[in-house]
Length: 301
Image (tube, rainbow, N blue to C red; front, side, top):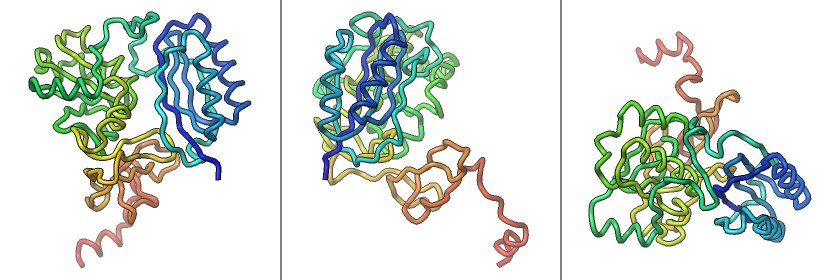
């Protein structure tokens, strides 16, 4: 059976003609049988793709042959062979939808004015020296099944909600404290750290390579607890055979790390659910009303 791999990558770098890069990426991906999502903007590339190992290796080699992507950081993980339904390659105003395209400055070195990068080992060294605040740069549902210990998890349902949270002063009490931002692969916290610094946060770091790189280095024997939510058909991954289970089922409260979409086809809400309640679980907005007769029986009986 062919070995499948998933490749997670991003690179902030000026692109003179994102549409031309889109056409090249579309042609390359289709020719190699690659599936996944690739976003492009004038500020660079952000993607997660999957396919047979040989095809993904050829894709990675061609990606790095393009001068602006020569130093791109590639993160590899095991695939299932059915991780993405199709190949999507799009050009957008932002690589990550913070709704702050006018604020972001990018040069050949990446985001200008971003947080100080920390490798996983440098992160541990900092934590040993002084107290730090971990700041989750993901949507809050992702943190329900995995997060850094004692992290601040902003109450945001979408990435573009972060700016409003920062601007309303929700985290002003952290402005004079050392903060370590983190996210899945590094792309979101790279932008977030720059937005925080421009709003008066004085000491902001970013976990270089994100949770993925940290998990590769320390697994579940460091500061990370739980599973990592991923945006493909796997839904979540673990870094070892002794990962903590910190999620609680939306329906019954039992321990689980499973994530599923709301059962309503029109809804994109993600829910933490156990195996027993995985089929057809619906969010509060799309919950099926209990018939009056059944509700009365439940109350009385």
